[in-house]
Amino acid sequence: MSRFNRPNKVDSLAGFRTEKTEPTVPFGLLKAARKSGQLNLTGRGLTEVPQNVYRLNIDTPEEAQQNVSFGESDRWWEQSDLTKLLLSSNQITQLTDDIKLLPGLTTLDLHDNQLSSLPGALGELQELYQLRLSHNQLRSLPVEVCTLKNLCSLTLQQNLLESLPEELGQLENLTELDLSYNNLKVLPSSLGKLNCLQKLNLSHNKLRCLPDISQVVILLDCSNNHLTDIPASLSEMRAMEQLYLRHNKLRLLPKLPAPMLKELYVGNNQIEQLEAEQMACLTSIALLELRDNKIKIIPEEIASLSTLTRLDLTNNDITILPASLSLLPNLNMLLLEGNPLRGIRRDVLTVGDTVRTHTQYTHSGNSVLLSLISQYYEKQASNIPDELFDAAADQGVATANFSKNQLTSVPSRLVEFQASLSEINLGFNRLTCFSPDICKLLQLIHINLGNNQLSDLPPELRSLTKLRSIILNNNRFKSFPDVLYQMISLETVLLSNNQLNEVDPCRLIKLVHLSTLDLSNNDLLKIPPELGLCTSLRCLSLEGNPFRTPRAAIMTKGTDAVLEYLRSRIPT
Image (cartoon, rainbow, N blue to C red):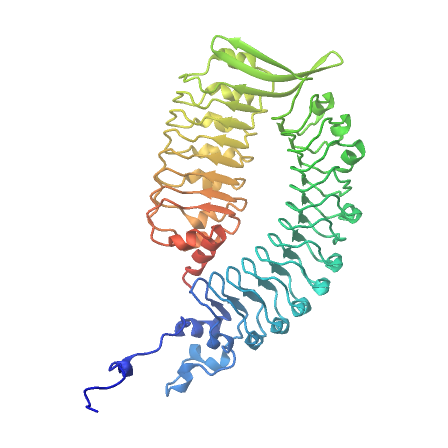
């Protein structure tokens, strides 16, 4: 056969080619990890944990194989054991038994991967303090995990769990357990043995009943399940401050003599009546949500809830309200929309183009004011008539709605309601400045200034120490308003569709209650990595800005993924 007629095609460049391998961990990261004891491999496209990561504490480093001298800072034999390993936001499908080669780990973060199972070798990580496994495809939890005596935080939300091992009660130091968004129908009875548990999230499962739960739980979320009743042991939870029972099948308000309970959410159930005995138990309640039920009567004993500040009765079957409701000394928010109220006289007083709607209730010959809402919206007016303010004088106005007009300044007479006004809506006007006089309204909780022409806010705004939310969408702000950095009570800041070109994360992090921040559709050329340290954020909107990173693929994963990515970019 001729040497030119070879039967098989030969790759003449084969000797120069190298096989493609999975992404490896940069040498510099491993070297730094030996010194710090921490290794961050978040968002690196890994499909498995590299072997040199598992063996970080065992193998001699590469540089030790070379004939070089070591300075004092490069003594690899004095390395620290790895204590913190972050592997979130990858495509890891399997964790091998080699994880036991890292027995010094205190934090292991595997959230947002593709794990369908876990190795029993996890049980050998006896120093583990925090284990994050959320947003995976786990169907079960190995019993060995329940032997981790030092484990304090275990997060398993957004998996496919259908059951949990009975040995879960052995995690005697567990303080936080998140099992939300799974397929759990029952819980192990040993859950009640977790005597250190403080935060327990069971929401979005298929639970029909609850086991006895530890008395030290401070926050319990059982929303979006199939509960028809709750165990009597729940009434013994003396430390509980927040209880969420929304979207279940409860027919009665639970009897909860919990002396520390401040917030109770039982909206979207099938509750038909409130009993005086149940009301009397809520001795410290500040927020009571009863919306979207079938309640017909509010008992007079509601007056015993002297600490109540917010009461939501939206979308029930209430036709009459008790006069005692007006005696609640701290109530500043009463929501009644969607009820067939007949015992309330709604007077509509027309003075020229002025409309004033207020709600009164007559009992035993006395006119008791329950709520007063000044409404003057969609009038396209350039000013608010004095007649409106005169008619509402001394009436305890709680909400002022002057949206969709042509106002160029904030009505100065709003100051007359400084003792009661908690919400102002001035959206869709032509405001160019925000009067410092309005900063005298010290009871304000919500302000809507969206769709105006504002470019700055007065420094006096810092005096509004109760303000929780401010809406500034569709204005002309070029930077994050300086005064907002100083308002630590803020929970919601909406600044979309402005011209913001910068935000200072070092100042933003001081807003410890900030949970919602909307910066979408602005001119942000870069997102500072330090923004990832704002861990109180639950909703961060950055869409529509001209920055290149984070990439769209990360943005679509949600707020947690974006914050995790930003943290991974912070220079060490």
